[in-house]
Amino acid sequence: MTQKISTCLPESALPGFSRLLVEVEFGVLSRQCANYGICRIEIARGPGRSENSRCGACCGRALASAPGEGELQLAFFRSSLRKDALRRHFSQEYFLVEEAFALPGILCEGLKAPAAAIDCGRYPILKTPYFLIVLFNNLIKL
Image: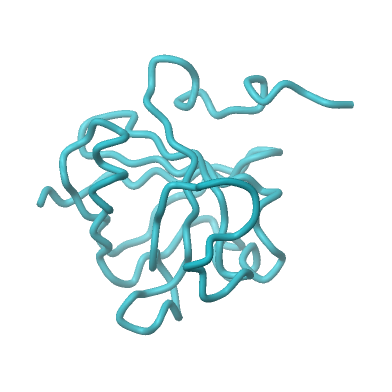
């Protein structure tokens, strides 16, 4: 049975919120995208993996939104995550960020949000049948 995507979306991704389809590469930039965190976020250009991706198993597609001031929500499509990425980054009740990550300007512009960075820390994961939702709620203003 096929469902309309609007019936699967997290509440904050419904109309009224700016949202963008993004590709996220997990890891820490200073460690060549190894370990835990976010190494890269870019606007998704179409089907398949980005050419910039170093590791297909370390990436996932998400809907990005800015539901409140100083917040970034990434709703990862479960279907876009490989087993290795699920086990490594989403098997706990939280998403771990080991090193602060500056959000790309194009993402902030697209979400109509000020320049910011995700601080290191543990962020709760809301698990739904179609999405793994992470709310980064203590963005650092740049």
